[in-house]
Image (cartoon, rainbow, N blue to C red; front, side, top):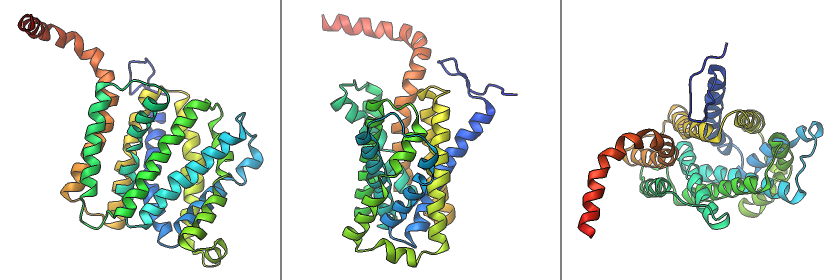
Length: 321
């Protein structure tokens, strides 16, 4: 029996079982950052990510038909998602950025997506988005000033590149209009491993053969966890939920990802929550929440606020005259 827990403006309510599933996926994605850290502590970050996408692609593409999308888009998505997002995020954690902070910086991709939409798609920026952007930029400033050893300059830059890449693929998905997202993700994953293995050799002077011969159980478990539950299962379930509920209802749930990521980092790696980190976390989360909440509550509160503002507006108009 599916009772209704949430009754949004769009008239579609989320059933209890779906709510549990959605929260479970965000928990999975959040704790995945600690799993990445466990992996990069035992294997080169580019090799780790390359193996992740190898397992995510094979054998899935043997059983899933190629999506009705041009090869160039599949390849571009796969390389950007594999190298640009997760290759960079793995490098950021390998370079000393804590798992919780890495997830928080990745959340900044929301606003980079907005800026890209304005530049490339000629979309409007609302006042609530401007406020959110300012709050999140302040959050990044606080992250840059964290001195407890959980933030490094190189790690910060790698994570920011990951956020930019994530915004880029969001723009690509919007432009292409993909229908079968599971097939698209599975097939695109096949284009990520070779560039990642090449990056390992060119940047870190590490070969795939050397890493495979010394692969331990921790690194293998990290690879398999990232490939199957996180990438294939996670994105498949999330997109199934997206097909049933409006984006405006689903998007706020992604705010749980950095919360679970920070929780995982505290539990497994004893990450310290100093004041700068708490302020940065609060600012970035507030920056993401404001643009989501304001459009929803404005139609509800304006009928009550408008009569109160009328005398002030009239007096202002008289002064101007």
